[in-house]
Amino acid sequence: MNQQTTVPDEFREILENIKEIRDNVGNAVAKYRSADDIVKIMAVTKTVPPEKINFAISQGITLLGENRVQEYLSKKDSYDSSAEVHIIGHLQTNKVKYIINDVSMIQSVDSVKLAGEINRLAVKNNRKMDVLLEVNIGEEASKSGINAGGVFDLAQQMLPFENIRIRGLMAIPPIGADEKIFAHMRELYEKLKELKLANVEADVLSMGMSGDYELAVKHGSTLVRIGTKLFGARKYMEG
Ligand SMILES: *Cc1c(COP(=O)(O)O)cnc(C)c1O
Image (cartoon, rainbow, N blue to C red; front, top):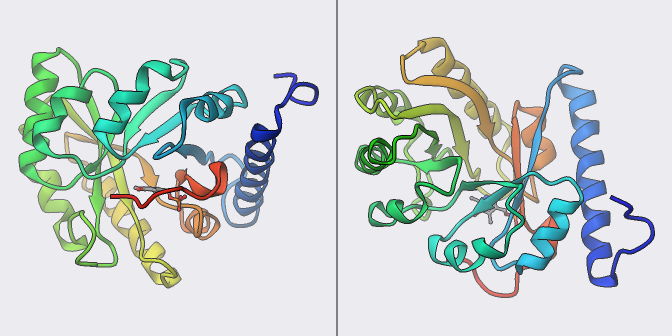
């Protein structure tokens, strides 16, 4: 990591962005959290070419977030394989088979049907899959995820799925959301832990993106998912 000497111009911005995000996360942890709390920084890769992603990995990013299965499949062979990959976008049941052996977590589980298919393929491939339940915390019609009220029902309905481990919750709060929304997510996460269901080992609250990650850290996030602030503005609309 001799970053001082040989960073090409197009990557210098990424390097500065990583430093800024790390500083801001560190400051938010120092201000609002316990000193030993760890908040992971995920690089969200949609529309970003593999060279840039690999550069971020060379600078210590160890976790990638993928939105679209198709895009991921076209890029994954170019990725430095040392980074872990999580699915963070809406996942269609019929696409689980393409990613079941490549990713270490699916953050976007929002139905029993999807969970059932993940479990079926996890059994078939002799592995356990870590998942997060995605909560539509702002109850926005345009977003996937279960409503806050459905979190514990879904976790319970997933009890028979022995090859799935629920590691926590994920949310995309509305743009400009009130702090209460973030606090509400933290409450749900703490309650999920208290239930002590056999299929829950919760240590991940995935919350916070480019526009709100410091607020998310303030309210208990353990994993922030950063795209634009890391790689720059995306060139085309996301699906
Ligand atoms: C695109 C995306 C992000 C990152 O968004 P930015 O605002 O670019 O940081 C995080 N999480 C999910 C689920 C996304 O789709």
